[in-house]
Length: 282
Ligand code: GUN
Image 1 (cartoon, rainbow, N blue to C red):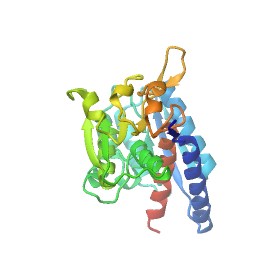
Image 2: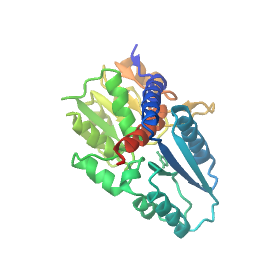
Image 3: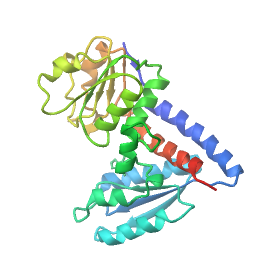
Image 4: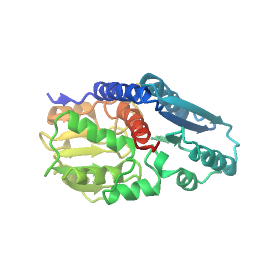
């Protein structure tokens, strides 16, 4: 049977390390604070925001909560971001996505000061990642790198195949795996003969958003499989993009859903907040 990559445990370890760092920063008179902006009442977004605030509380990060009504104008949101950009005691700004339809998400993301862009979504953060400059890295792919490193999965020289090319996961994941000296292939909905490509993977990272799509025919014997998907199956149980029961016996290691990649996203958001506080000038 494969090794189960325990995201719950690894994310807890990271949060405990950060808690320690935050308490050291506090001894030096430095606080860490994250502004969390939620527009409207999308139920999933409310749950994510609540979990982010809870993680802040655990680590000792101050969370400033801005819960704005659905009919907030784009100008009002931009003006709040501008105000938070100017506050020296705010280290991170997070605007929960998706935004209501009357707002231009790209414009809103671009308004965040890149020094406070703890989601790593600003074009400057993405550009910095692509040419190897310092900057914030999107939390889910950064969390996957931590899962692999802390599970002692060698990346250098390995074939890594990524399924999905989103701006938030697939593309930054490819850049991070390149940084680790893996040989990287990015596949997507127009890829021809996907199983033939994914079967080449020593490390297969699936972020395609299709429930239990990846079966054993897509996986090489002994591969490491990372599942970014999050769905509900016919019994209303959480499941991923990978058909776990079919794929697991073939792998050397695999992430479960839930308890794999999911918990890492918030841990890395917290990591980015602490990093932001550490790089803030006096
Ligand atoms: N909506 C779903 N995932 C995310 C995320 O990682 N960050 C933000 N800001 N919104 C999201």
